[in-house]
Length: 114
Image: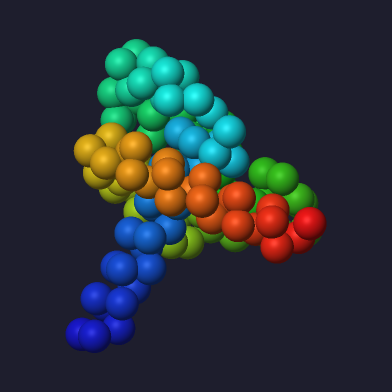
C-alpha cells in the first residue's frame, strides 16, 4: 500500500508541475497576465487547453510510426482531465506564492550559470 501512496504523491507533483508550467511559463509572465488568465478560464478549461497544446491524450504512435501502441502521457501516468483541473484549482488558490518560488529558483539558476 505504501507504493500506491508514493505513486499518488509523484503523480500529484507531476500534475502540479504541468499546471504551473502552463500558467507561469518560465516565470516570465507578469502578474496581470496571470490574473487575466484566471479570470477568463475555469480550471477545467485550462486543463483542456494544456492537454490539447501538449497532446497529453495522444499516444506516441501518432508522432512516430515505429511505436505501435505506446500509451498517451495521461494513460501512462494514470490521470484524467479532472485530475489536471484539480491541480489548476489548487494552483489558483496560492499562485502568487508558487510564482515567487519559481522565479527565485529561476534567478538562482541563472546566477549559478553566469
